Length: 456
Image 1 (cartoon, one colour):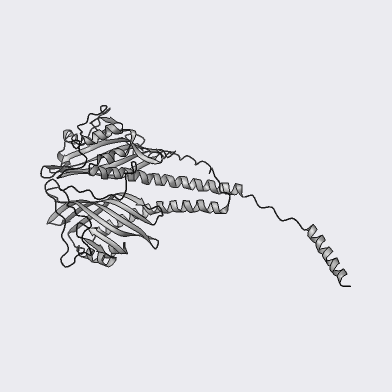
Image 2: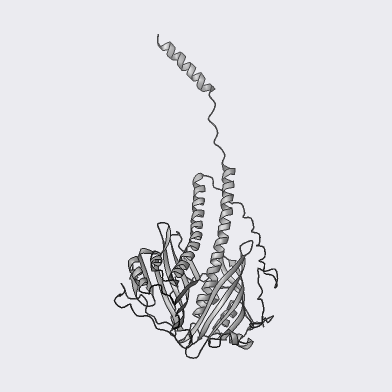
């Protein structure tokens, strides 16, 4: 009777199953997810502060580019509605409408420059201090001015901005703009012969201020330290301790699943990728300038993708890294006695949402010369495109627009070189994409970005 052993075996098995321990309950990961979410929120808050610094740099540097071209509506758009503007000793303008009147009063009520007018104002050397809550900021900037009217006269000057900014609706705006002019002198005589009266010419508008300058500060040659928002006092050279950063609020919506947690991490990774790109791109733009200084064609050409384009000074468009190398080679080999200081300044850096491409508007400031023969100043604007190529940022398109090349002894008030001709025997792959003439003609190099406040 084989059935009895089977019944006995079944009974024994059933008894064993009945006595087996129950399956463990699922572990509650809510607290652990909350801790991870709080850590992500903390890192994200720090990343946001870095992004705020980048946005503030872009904002002021855009101000400079709009100022260059007397695009006063764009300039006024960058200010908060209740902002103030003061260019000593010409009074205080309160509110966006009054600030717009001030700028229009610099050019006889016109938007834009006229034939023969130069109005450059470089924005350099920022020291930016962000408030603990990330909603306000202060910054010190160096201004360098080059202006004049062709065949009438030219000036150069320098000053310091001590500005305040406010973040409204997630957008940074200028809350207070205060320019302390250091000197403003005719080009021919230079700063060694300037006076307070000559310095006071800068920034004088035909528009009446809302109130007078509260305190008149001396200009060069008087020694005076313009107030520093980050210093302990007028006789201190120690930077004040940084403001403590507010602790980020706990994450409001902690992820409930690993999938949700992974999504938060991916979003943070993308944010950090875009922030890292800003530093890498600024390094790349500056490296190009250093290589150009020394006519290092091999080093310069590897900064470009295989299908990149290059268009400089009206010489047409060259396509591909090999053609770009040959273009660079025709600029001349490194030579004793040749100066070609090729500074890349005032970058406005815009990284695409996916972090894989970017644009930079940068200012060229150049000193060129041959020892014992000639010397020139040059200024221009780059609008460059970049792409992440196998993990390395490279130029996808370099566009250089000439503002002026002027002999050192004459200056931009008396001399400006036209666009250069094609290299003999080395025509471009395409004609230049934009027809323009440099100063003293009026030309506004196209902007890759919209106004960050108005969106136009």
